[in-house]
Image (cartoon, rainbow, N blue to C red; front, top):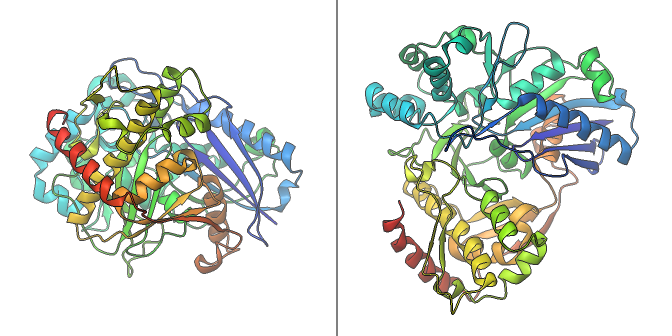
Length: 490
């Protein structure tokens, strides 16, 4: 018996096939080989074609089959993780009406800020736990105001994972966790946020039917099965946004536990058992995957947009070096990068900066001192410092993070990055042999009844632990200096 997981990112689609009995991953794939492009029709905008995601799902599945021949009838469930906060609009024939406005698009910031002011801080924070900000609901309002002919044709709106699930099953549905990430959920009423919909003049019928995060969400159609080379009837049994799913992937389910990732975006996501919010909505609270009416499990998320794109940009500047060589070169510079400071805020509005789009900043550059290695180290340090900035906000919400789990992937492949992270945040990092696609496959097993939550992590191993070292005190000083420099940036 197998479990199949997909992770629908903005850079690529990843797929994983797990042997259900052992919990071991038997095949993984990524499609495309090069990063998927983002379209930016205007400064601060970011769009992608949802049908491209679907094409890459098909290709990634075929790559899995080339690695490990398996009978599609032996797949017990499909799980989906996806890039959060995107907006997909489809008509009554389930055809996409416009490119998806994705997570790092900033066009709706003003709309969300106006809603926060007019609906009132008290309502927004006590009911939504967030400002409407630049989230999916505000993006839909932007379409309504600026593309009324498109809006008039919308039959359903959905998040990226909802769209892929619809392509798999033919059914339009979503989850409470998904609604909360779009700021469509009223935590106080435990229902759809009708007051926000009324304010934005959004018809509730545009929202898809609600299904459980774990459980039957539809089954593979004959048409989809033919495209994927699978068997019709396989149930889709799980979906979640990439960061709640990353936390699940790392068995981060209980209060005080935290997960982190540094891929396309940089994130620290911690589980809380309280209805908590940041008054400036710089970090955001969403419904976690294992939340129930009797046991509150919310995820508090701080996100840094300018993570992967900074690393990618530097790769071009560094002469297209492989990322592992960039990591080696960065480690040749001294701690603190010889005073060079990078503020990695160059990929749209940053929520930790109250939705400001400040652009990236390099400070203290000295041409007769700093070389390529200093620039690369300052970038890794700057990303860590920005993550620490967000965690400091979470600490103000009475969250005590001492141990953090991460997948052995992306920037956590860099020994330097891992050690700077442990030193700056004063935490122990546990690295695991997992990723979002594998986590989605495990979660599909829970939804299909193959696993309970307690035994879903068989076969997952902690492959390394990183503790603060002798440079911890130094990094507290360097972070303090970086923080002082924020005054001229944000």
